[in-house]
Image (tube, rainbow, N blue to C red; front, top):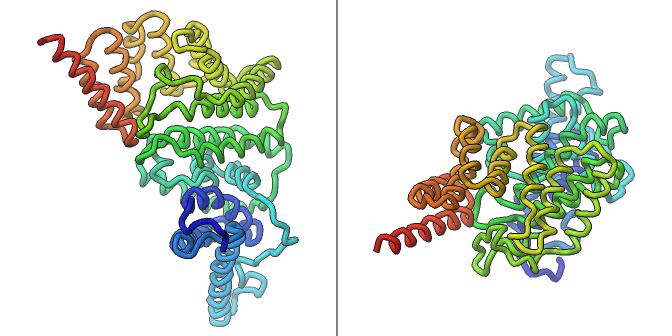
Length: 424
């Protein structure tokens, strides 16, 4: 065992290692669903044993061995069952009596996460199913977290992931890096899933912490790997830039007690200037090649924010223009929501509030906290304090992240105190 104290960082470590171990086990056994089940059993064993006994010197190898052992046991049991059935009915040929044949390969230790990423985005799956499966297998998100990202019920998402795993198995896809043509076909889904993994890490959809740096860090690592594979792709560079420019603000997003600090109130001296410089360079080079895509435009917006020395120096007209380009590309309600904020910053809160009316009937935002939160913010800017309080409270009721809920309730309480003072 290593010198690391028992239980120290076990959960983040397991999340980081899970896709790597899954990739190694799939490469050996060539069965997605069975491999994932075996890896989950290994992770449960580690979560139980490591806090008590200490983390192994090579935790990835430990997990791989345990998962392989579990899957080998399953293979032997399945083979015995099939042999019994074949003996009874005399119909099953010998070569089909073992469904899972271990492939020891060359024994080389390597990180198969990128191969797993492209495998999960196989064209046998619909884009939505590919993204959901990748978030589960590569990102390590729970079914509930993925459902929140897709704005669908958890049961629906569970069925979607189960069907996706069966489709991968039925497709017979080999566990290897796809050809250039196959990469091009799957790239859009790959980038979208990396974007969602990063977003879940940067602002967790639920739980006591505002962000999960293990997820955002893994998304950045994987996007760097895709960028190294496809250095001339503008959208890959744009996504990596967007992640770096956004993650650069992480240290300033929370206060001493973990409370949320909004962008306009952050201490910008805490921002990571190295990440900002790298992100700006990436998006500048990508945009110079022409044909700007959605990720490049979002990165450009992030760059405008990050390059402003103070919140009041932000070039909101440029941000508004960039959001209008994004609106022409996408029917994403979150883009529309952010566009309304930019409209309010340029043309006043009333104009922004008018833009929000189009989202009231959008079922994708039904029950989501972001719409009432933005409306509350704009109502406050318009001087409508009592209405703002009501929407801050509605947003807080819908928020599943503890820091976001606390922030929204604090805003409502602050405005309530202001109203009482004004009436006193």
